[in-house]
Every structure is written in C-alpha cells, then in structure tokens.
Length: 80
Image (tube, rainbow, N blue to C red):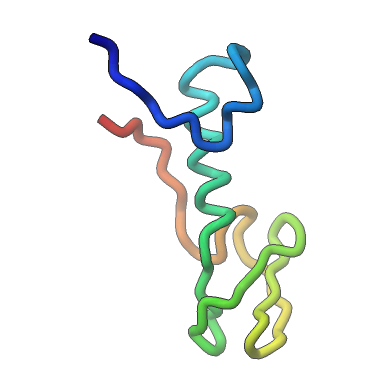
C-alpha cells in the first residue's frame, strides 16, 4: 500500500511540478506562515510585510531578516 502524503498548501498545483518541488514549496510556506519571534522584545508577534521585511506588532519595530523566516534556516529533507 502506498504512503499517504499531506497535501498542505500545494494542493493548488494539482498534478503539475512534481512531488519534491511541491514538498519544498510546502516547507517554505509553512515556515513563512508560522509565528516568528521578535529579536528585540522576544515576543511572537512578528509578521512578514514583504520578502525580507518584518514588522513586530508588540514593539512596532520594522527590521530586515531572511526571506521566509526571521532567523531560522529551512531544511529540505524529506519526511519519512
């Protein structure tokens, strides 16, 4: 019996682009959407304004970070 995979946010692509590419996109989008911690006040109130631009809702600071997360590196290892 084949393993079932979670569709996550890549369901919109349908049968296009392949499994590995959709898995990478799903990991990036999950990391981008989860709550991020502010490096100044350490509260989880940071939202992404645009690529690399972040804004904290608690201390109202705007700062630059990584494109999809404030400080973490995203790994593309397949889940087994």
